[in-house]
Length: 263
Image 1 (cartoon, rainbow, N blue to C red):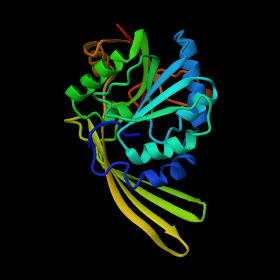
Image 2: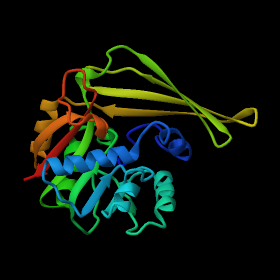
Image 3: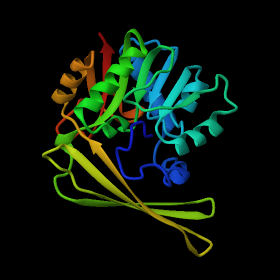
Image 4: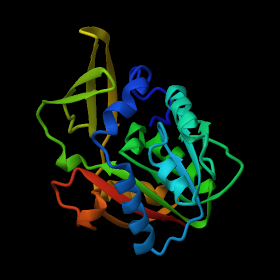
């Protein structure tokens, strides 16, 4: 789900081939889309067309298409888009997947709503890039169109270094990923080093590292950024699954879902 030019070292290149194996065991994409539809209902959004920014391998776009939405996804990773196109080839309506930079793109059409899931907006590491992206998004929305997206909350980020391990075993291979992160409170950036170990048939099949750097925000900072980009922030709440409903944002809320409307 990368839609910006080189925000992180090698991001989603070799990772792309293992992405679905890892995240289909960790993320309930149908549940995410259920939650999106609840957001649409809560904010009186009745979209027919959806633009997905940083769409990755299309894991949100496929269930949206199955529910009747006309979906276009953009991403900077050709590897991720190739997988998305293969997965969506038999769907009707078939999602459209376009190689594009989220900061500046021209699709020749407007959409009822734009979405940006899973913190992908944070790959825009400068205010200039973020504003350029917001203005591109606004250009591609119908008048008074909506932008529904997730961002990571700086005040909830851990100030000290931390590590997490992910272990996935399926399809005759075993994937181990070590995540090492250290939040920088001066810049609000969270660099995460992914170290991948892929095993199969009793041996190491693949071994590589990727660095992903994410820009975090405060709610106040995001509201001002949206204002400068031509949007009004309508609401924020904890990004969670549909069963937990709409929970208010606290200092400890790390993943925030935001709803904005173009002016």
